[in-house]
Length: 154
Image 1: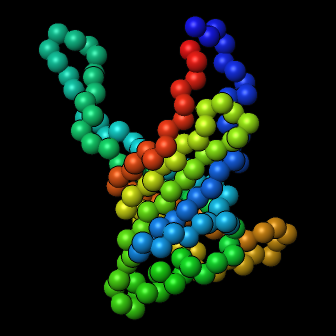
Image 2 (image 1 turned 180 degrees about the vertical axis):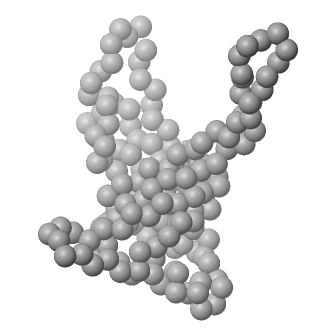
């Protein structure tokens, strides 16, 4: 049994890639800076006679996150424009892969289903030094672990 964590098994945060699937077409988001989907447990308080503790019962889950991109593409603007003019919104998923080849844990790939941006920045101008970026909060309903990390020795 291992008594301490092998520091080489800690994955570097920048080792990975993000791929959007829009209407069945895979698009590698080379401009991605950050992809952080998370699942939140929605709970109801539960009280019982004879206990001073308020417990919790999980009643559902919800998915949300942030996708940060360098602003180098009009792809998201075109999706919004098509919806505004036709009412059509494509089916979207986003897949993130974490893989630092210097670790012994391998890679993890997770697909986020029913991806829906909360908003899309149509243009970004600012009297400042720096690069143009787009921070896109999103919601999703469903995910699949495609590839899991190898478990660390405990």
